[in-house]
Image (tube, rainbow, N blue to C red; front, side, top):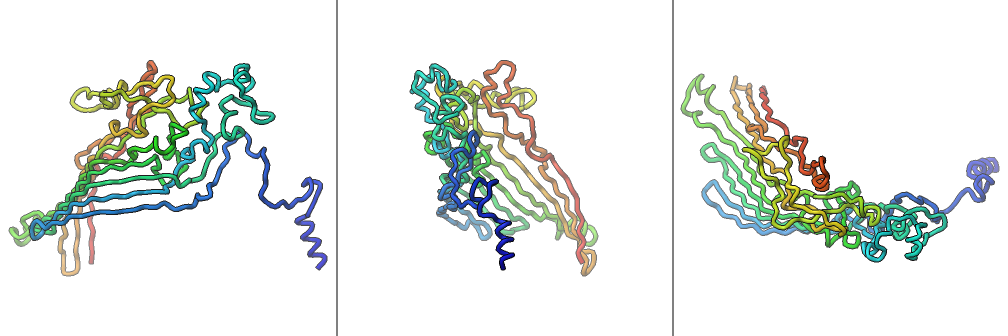
Length: 409
């Protein structure tokens, strides 16, 4: 037994000069020097709180004919406790209060030992501090950002009017038409992955929620969907081999048309990023100006012109915050138009043998959906670098055609 005790004692010594005393230390470990100059991870007490969703709806149904009905619905969804980015903690994320810009004008970017900083009464927060006056005035001056893990602070609100007309099979035709008029608002909590950056974009550190409330980047006010199948006439008209070849063909398709999504228009933040340590800076919107550039020619050509009208935004100047919203409903990406069609027929080869032929046409009209344009308006004000609104990529697949045969027995 003594051998086991000695063995354990040697494997896990209670004390050793190499440990500087006790080798087994019991948490919590309090060390003010840990992570100095870095961005520590912080975990909120309610960090594991699950999101809450409340749904309600009201539907009116009307039978139009024996095979057709109409549905008109109001649909709503309210989300609370949504996963948010660390920036939503505002000042607790180690950003600075913009009031400091007025309290200490023109010196916040200077070194802590600069005479102007010393004269303003700003001193180093701890021995050995090296940095700017703005860094010294942060809530935790020894750190950069405080990266809170998935804090449940977000909220959203969705309201929609949905109209559906549906017909069951009648004379070979079956279809469903759906139109949705909706609005989706939130405070920037766009995804369930709070730390992926999309949920950030906070401009004012003292107002990370109310000032960020507005359209969601997934807001699509108009969506029109059509799905249908149609057995082409002629199956009963033709007989024998002709009927077997020409009869029984079916046409099916799915059509989708939806509005473009609103975009986040930003600008250069180098003048304030090192002082406020905020997520982004946005420009001012020019009242009455169209956000989209006038199309040159018969259609928009991204190789010939940019998508946005740079004159629709202006530089806020000395104001650290522009009045442009987090995502702008007047500055949307390209709408989505897509039509997929298929033609198919089943041939009866023998009593137990069936062969199905399919011809499928994806994006049959070969429409082009461009990806979102460049959203940094500052390039508009930089001579020779006018990339704002520029487009370089297509975001949908070109037309595809495929044929298939399936034999069942």
